[in-house]
Image (tube, rainbow, N blue to C red; front, side, top):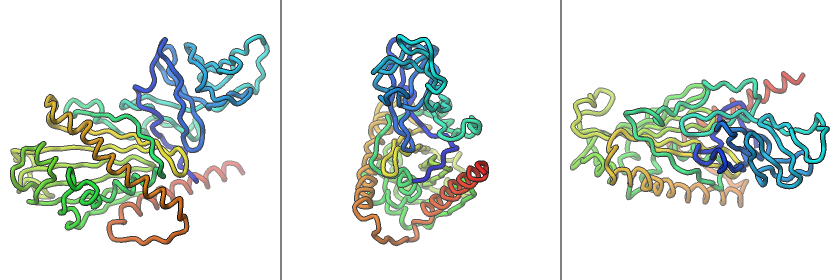
Length: 354
């Protein structure tokens, strides 16, 4: 499988890596490559190939020693540049005693990794997850979920809001989603699918959170950015206040919620799913925090079942035909945009190699 390598992906949640005496190596396969991450003495994160160049033992089975990571087989120590700096009982260190290293940056409560050419790693290209430290938003980050599915299936799922009606019927789903034609916008690296459902019954969870006793104006919008960044915007306002011509400032009741998806490919059929929620209401309400923390995770778990079942059937019948329907416009655009970027990267690399 081909991946877009010159891009930032989430390698870990910041809390997965500790510093000091509690520092431990973290193993993670990304794009079929074994990576080991650790925090150095000063708290900075390092990431190198998870393989000792001596006898190939995963370095993640070793130990963190201050700035270095030590192989658990023969004690070779590696620095953050992937170079062997200590060989027990031997002064000479061969120049070839090194493994691949990766650029990493800690931002927005995540550890981001660049799997492509290090010289092209531009920090400004990290997805804008500003909700993580914005005073007007409550950010609820979730632990990483390992899924047995192609990471692209997650963007397919997110960009098709009609599945909420069926998969999430008791929580955030509503039949009105299937009744409204979406507005679809796209550019070379971006897709947006949005619907305004005006003066309709809000989903049960949103009605409770916003105190709606009747109908509401609801926005369901999804944005995708290459290669894997998806944001769901779920907003509800009093009837007459929403829509393209509405004035949401006049709404006595309102909720604004975002669900952030950042799946990282592990292999062609597995991924690490990093996701988080942010809301602009109920900061100090324990019940609201319970629902939009553990409760929303349960909503996502309903998707996990669908995604893994999809992949299992695709694995069993790889050549089975499938059809497209109207709701596939957003997902299909995501696939085409990503494929074009991957092909452009391949051609650029081929040209540079000549």
